[in-house]
Image (cartoon, rainbow, N blue to C red; front, side, top):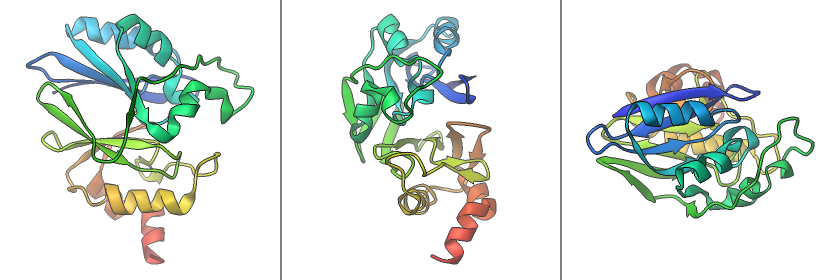
Length: 214
């Protein structure tokens, strides 16, 4: 597996380039503002063929460069179906954005149980709402890695106070869909450093507090 991460944009959002080292097929997961050139450089440096761009959700900091990048690479964009309106109109959640973001209509919608194939990699789609209605996470079982977007962070959780967010729904997504994964699963979040499911299960203060009253 080839994995490159890019941190970019006004709120230090993570974008990921994931590839199968044998077939050189790749997918890009989230495209923060001002990440296009860095992602393209990694594609060239590793001689990769990008199959698609997958968005964990539709918030502006995760879709900032998606239109430009998808047009440059001539690849489809996929997102959880409930978040399609946000990708089409990024300013609908946070009007008056200081960072201009061009909307676009994704070509593919994803839902629970879908599998995205990339060479020998198989990314299983987990619908994990709570931060946004259509938020998805992507789990690769053989490589034991999870791209969690803005649901689960190192020692923290995603916010649930934006339109379409809900705290109880968020926590049910984390506990019922992410914490059931093996402890050794490496979590690559939408912001900040990577972590593991096991570490978060044992040490995340938000999860521990929730489970006390669960």
